[in-house]
Image (tube, rainbow, N blue to C red):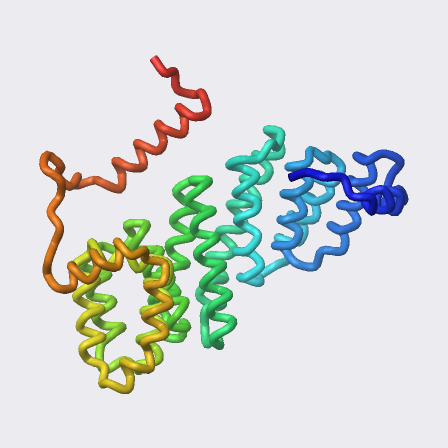
Length: 312
């Protein structure tokens, strides 16, 4: 709902110091905010606002500031947090072609630099810092898949995730998240992932580290356990190995991980644990390349919705 508020008139007058028209004032105000921005992710968000609003002066200033700051930044969390707003502009924005090309090059650079910094950023984190890095990882990975960059960029990103997983100093929560992202990307096979979970959740692993790895892997992806017998078996073995006190202590963790499942998914998970598998409807068989088939399907659907593909 749009509605005029009387105080808007006062705010318009106050912002006349930035320019005599709304467009010039908006440009001036954003340029000032860009100059005051201290982090990459804040700059990226301001650039997104400027380009979306078609404010050319602020867009140019923001891109220049973003490129300069990116050249001197090695803070992994900032690098990763700047990726989603730029990806949104490239995928859905109204940027001119030259700006899109410039942004795409900058985005690739940020992804590669973030991937290089990631193994070091994941070391020896406290709970709050680990949760922040995990959230940034998931959002950055989603943005990277959205823009579908060149293969060398994807390789750099996956290598960064793999380095986190391989390092003995990586915080367990972040390592679990990295393992899940590699699994979803097809970089880890189902068999290798099941083996990894069995190792990371084994009785020889401290319970607190096993729980953190479990949360990092399954947070937001608990429905995987419904369909993946290998993963489900590894988790079941871990839970069975816990004594009563440890199991009760980790019930809040299990509730968090499975809170995103609806009632139907929870019922199907219970049935899978009890060995009661639901069969596929008659006439349907699982496709051996289901992931690739769906990607092709959505690619065609996107072209159809944007008018690139003729209906006939």
